[in-house]
Length: 91
Image 1 (cartoon, helix red, strand yellow):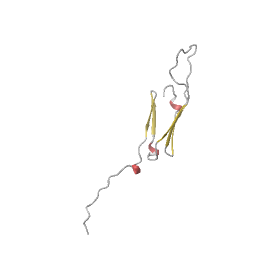
Image 2 (cartoon, one colour):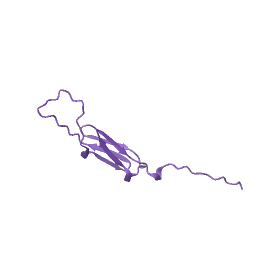
Image 3 (cartoon, rainbow, N blue to C red):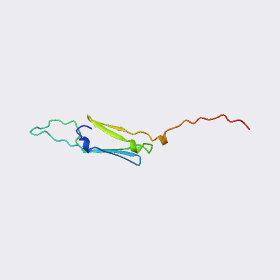
Image 4 (tube, rainbow, N blue to C red):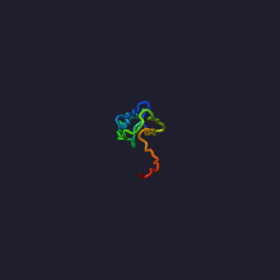
């Protein structure tokens, strides 16, 4: 996510869907002409079906050097638990 202002990144989680949106603000240098441009200059939006096992209150996001990092912990209610069994005596 190069050429993105971190203040304009929107991250939403709703009903199991994670959406990341940001406009790309590219400004051509003054008094210069580009001969070749390798970056796609357009708005960015992606929606992912994450499911409802995420703890919504603990989602966090950070952006540094063109990399968006998301932390989405699983809700403890949805974690698998191992249940110990006791030996039952036959009747």
